[in-house]
Image (cartoon, rainbow, N blue to C red; front, side, top):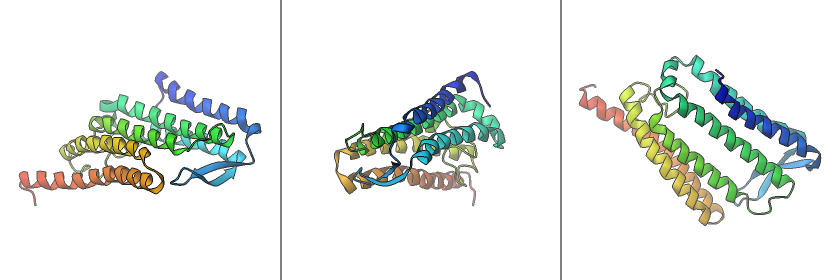
Length: 219
């Protein structure tokens, strides 16, 4: 479950926890916890909750991803993309940690510009990286485009993830350019591109399943 390389994500999580408690006394009683489509703060949480919740959530996601391969009936397949899986964990930990740090900086009023100029590029980069990883993911029950059709066939899985990689990379690029627009238009472009890649991958898995079924003479 844990190897020496796991010290990297663990160290990042520990660092965020330490930063939270270092800045705790300087934080206001109410800490920003949500931003609207215009990048304006529209919800707050208590100081203690805000300091603890994000690092705890990051740690939970990391531990969950570390355990899942061991209970997956297809756990042997993880050996075929172990590096991709490891770096996915690292990238998610980094993403969550940066979001947490942005929250702290916004609370301390060290960030005065529109927060969406940070959040959108981060999410876009996340989709670009996931798109790069997609074709390398092998069949499993927890990570990737898991539909009845991809789980039914190794070939459908592979073809779907090749297409999903392209769709996710495209979504990452489009969502990045959404930052050039203002307010709700930017949000709509961002959401359409992100959700389009996700739903497009699911639909494609069914299409390729039907195509392969006809080729093989199945009903």
